[in-house]
Image (tube, helix red, strand yellow):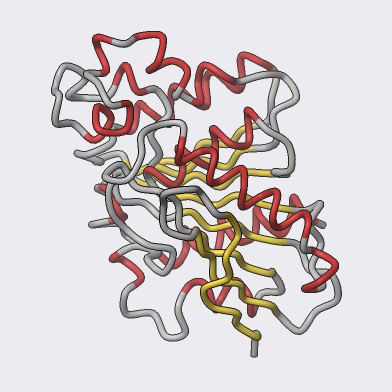
Length: 255
């Protein structure tokens, strides 16, 4: 059984709440790390929320990842009611830095970090992996990768507008700066992207655009459609299969 350290403070931001992560440590020598980043449209959610499709799993997904031999860091980040972009990705970078700096203390391998994110968390995982050091691979579930092409780009109440602090259409440079597709480069870490073909909240084309950009740069990417699945894997035919295949990818890239 994994040892669990709950509520570990990984960063302090003046004027904000402490930033916390839960750390799951398997009985293994120097295991690689999965950094899990929750969804919620950047405006809600927590480090313990893997998504509604997994609510009934016992043991839960985070415990299962640890049982598979990974150290797991499930991290909170500032939400849009607290701060605007780039606060959220800055927090993810801080979590990566903390993991690299505390690997010896906790006995995991801080040089092998897989960022695994869902929806807004997939956006942050991709953006952090492409714009900073320390992330060896990315698992992205139904992520937002190109803010300008999201539905509601003219809506001041959209999740993307709340992230940027302005209407997306009115700030093309800022929207590009906050979009992973604009930061793709040949040395990007490997990406495994999953997306439901019937996603009504984040269109499947978001992952399509991201995969095309990575391929165009010569980086490694695999895009796997989940036929008929809506956002958060609603109506997915086999959520367990998606989870297990994502886990296999994390294992392959850290061996």
